[in-house]
Length: 196
Image (cartoon, rainbow, N blue to C red; front, side, top):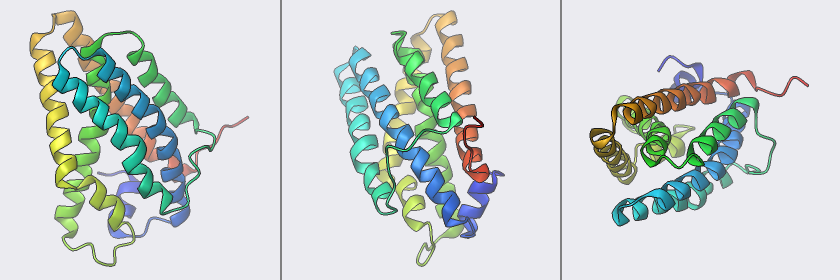
């Protein structure tokens, strides 16, 4: 909540250049995140979970692209160091073949965005005329909240059935991905670039 990007997004003072930088990196991130969700679908033993993650993969690549296109975002820009680190982390977790740990690693993207979007909407109320109403509305959406609830439900069930060492790895993956979410929102304020 104290990140400058989120505070300025809420009060509408976030410079457009910073928001476009954030969305540009988000487009890069979501392309990999969609593939990661597809890998979660491929590892799910339960067909309902397979369908859930497959739909999430589709949504992250196709539906959220519409938000990026309204700002003329190029999805093929060079990923920032933070974006590359986060997506590389997710890919490394996905390729290890431990489905519960992978679910824990993808959960923060659902949960944190839904939490932030919903609380922003609660505080702002009417978004009419707000410069970032489309972004807030995307993550405060009732359907997105339901997807988040289902992702948490899957993670909780997997955690309840996991051996202690797997549960510890799930917690570590969730914590690491949550840290990357913080870093992802911090990097655009610095217009993060590769130093060399």
